[in-house]
Image (cartoon, rainbow, N blue to C red; front, top):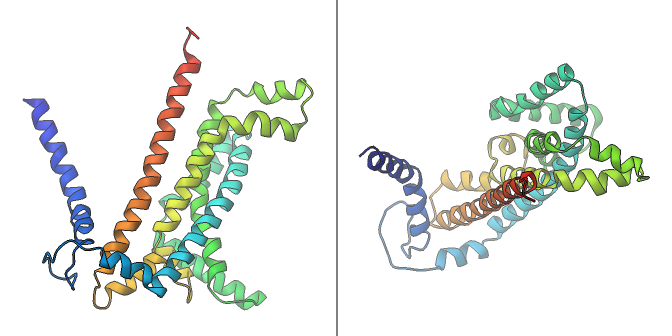
Length: 272
């Protein structure tokens, strides 16, 4: 009886969470002319076709993908370097650095967005250069993605045997080569997970991008501007595409984590 009640409770929770998304996906294939009324007008791909023919949406999509790829790559490199440095610190300095790293994650996004906007505007006034745009978006996205990469890489560094790096050097391997041949393969799962998380967060971000974008539009900002006017059914198709991309990335992350856990169990098995 308890198991049946727990299953029903779990089902209701998932229904409450995912029913709106399911309705959104269904009505992205609706042939009706309006998105404001729940009226089924027959199955149609017209809104997906119209979506990919819309120049403004495609431009916003291009900006979003460019920003996500660049910020994910840069934050992955910087976050990996920072994680290695933090891991090599002593206990008290490491704890202080971790508190500093965690602060941007718990800080409200609106505070981060406004503070970054003021910083970029002040920098433009002091040193000259262009106003807010792609450059400020790159810097802002790298800033808020960095802590997630650090937190993804650090556990892999702690799981690794610290003597492997020194053993490689004792066997005649130069420090740089020892890092790329020994350390990097061990922490690669954490690096990949951090990079995918950074990419997903960058695509999904609205608040920080809104304050630091200037005249540059990303997809979340464009969707927000669409909702302020007459809502077009294109927004259903666009939201469905975004949901599918994020869901695919989350599946990749979970599959990689499951494989890493299985490999760790095999390595620790006394029978092998």
